[in-house]
Length: 126
Image (cartoon, rainbow, N blue to C red; front, side):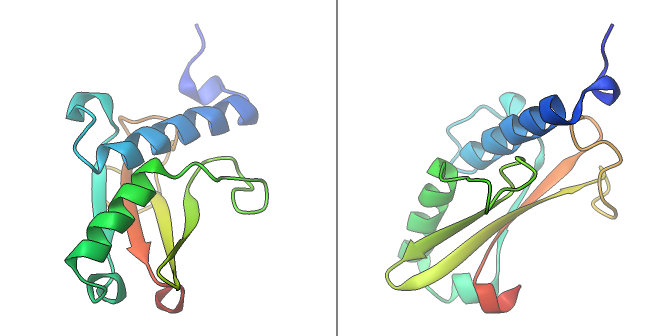
């Protein structure tokens, strides 16, 4: 029987990317909680300052984002993206933590050992 720990790097990256995609789509509340990995969606004060309408539009764009490529996604994990919005560049970054949100996940491909934090931020806030 193959376990998550036995995955080759290409299969592991594909699994993590699929989990990250499911989590991003879940931030709109359209995905049942049981179908998406656990985590938190946060935004920086710079994004919050853009106002509620911008926040809503950016959330929709993050959830629908699919413009990953080898330059912006070298690991193939679908963990970072860039969105242009009304002349403003906005980034999103997905970080994979342990279940206590203290350290990096010991096994990023295992949703039982991983919690995601998706941060929406402006580049100067990185």
